[in-house]
Length: 296
Image: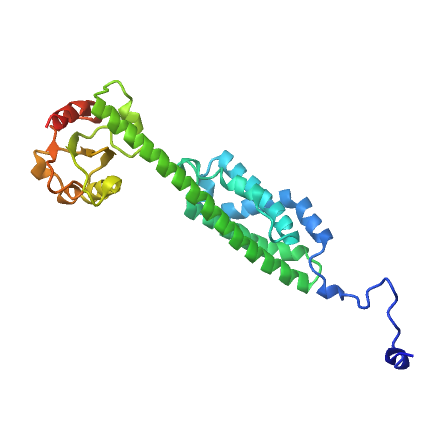
């Protein structure tokens, strides 16, 4: 006879668990997760209504943008359920939705606005989700899960916008190189104005072409150095390194090389000549300025 039997404690029945988990200690049930999935549409609609009250800029969005955001929220609810079952699961639907937002990083939402959307939506879910749970422990688990999931979504949004910014940066670089190359070639038929406008170049401003050798310590990094120097001087600049040559198109009038902002000249090799073409009335006439600068 065992000690348990002697003590009057029944022996465990083979094939059954020796102990049962009390109801209050059970994790969030599948039934609750299914209920959340089933009501994802209603939850997203109510969340959008809350956003309209919470965020002033939300009312200024187009109907299409608000519809996209509602779909993203609905996807996030489904992803939340998937994540609750498997914390290692990827937020595939939500990531795909976030990619709809930073269209050109100008036509869509800014990263700051997206962060505000995520924060306000999660604050709403913090209030609503626990109300459909079964007990206090599940409510606590649900609140903790929403907070952790929100952090994951925050990183997801930041990653998507970072990738969009990188893509836009690469596009800007290619467009800038194409515009400067067309000016150097003397291509007056190229659509310089529209491409430059996408790079924030004012089509009504005058332009001057400057040619020289890039500073040996900078190489292709001379291009962003030119941009920074131009902005500091209250101007705009388009620049490209073509082999051993740095070509800059600077907005505004220049009388001579002495009129070039000193910080911009630092992007050129100090022991090599820097030639300034004559100022023209617009970017479309810049090939004439380039021809003069290239002729030395």
